[in-house]
Length: 119
Image (cartoon, rainbow, N blue to C red; front, side):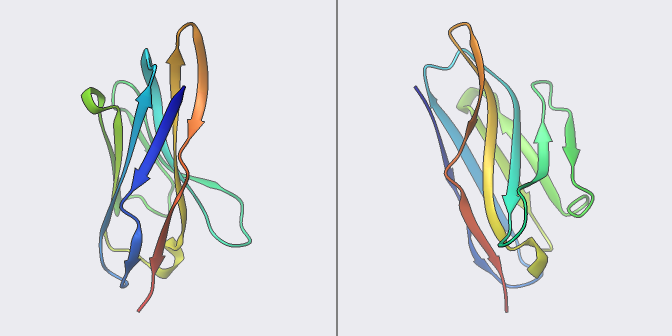
C-alpha cells in the first residue's frame, strides 16, 4: 500500500506565500513524476506544476514565475512553494505521484489541501 499525505494549505492574503508538502509512504520501489494539481469550485482539475525523476519541471502558464516545484527523493516528498498568491489561486490542491510498487506502476493521489487567497 502507498499513502500520500499533504500539508501546508491555509488562508493567506493576496501577495502572500504558502509552501505545500506531500510525502509518500509505503512499499515504494521508485517514484517517477511528481506533480501538483488544483481544482477550484465549478472547474475541472488542472495541472499546476510537475517534476520528473531528473528534476525537469513544467508549469502552468498562470503560475510560471510565482510557483516553484521541488522534490526530495530521500524523503519521497514533493514541495510547492507558492509566492505572490492571487485570489484566482484559491482551490483544493492535490499532489500526484507515479510510483512503482513491486513490478507495477500506478498513479497515486493525495487527499487534497485547501488554499484560500483572500483579504
